[in-house]
Image 1: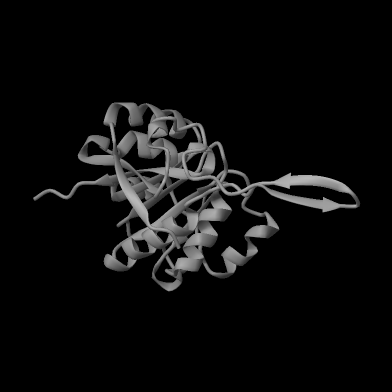
Image 2: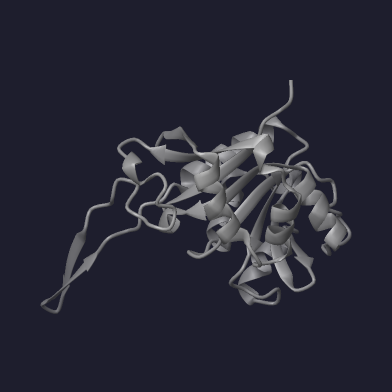
Length: 216
């Protein structure tokens, strides 16, 4: 696993991207914009060694991470080229895992924007009691009983889409064992008690993060 390095981001330039990414996507994104005081925290990103820091603010473009090699294969005399997309998802999953175990009040929530609540692919997440619903909107919730690096990675990959993907670390206590239905008030509680936010950026290679600064 590669080491991640933290780079602080300018507030105004980053906030413009965040507003554009979260605006009118779903209840979670809308309420994050409505209820989070972004000025109470800082924006930053996490990148691997050798990343192109001149592209820090090109949030909608890739090629910020060191690129994987192009692999050439030949089948029946025909050559094809393949290049695996660079990403920090595994390293970021480990980062989130350590945040969660350092504060037992925290849960991690990812939104799902490409699958419906009854998609059969989600069955394995239902079995782990990690799917919560607000109306027909799907959320992955990582709590004490499924707080592992692998499961965080599974949720991060499953919830990912190139145009929008958001996760939050929250101290909200609205995830019940006997019901997976979340009210608008529950969504608002999640947002009001958000301590960290992860927003997909750099064409899927990385994330823009926001962290609430604790008052002294």
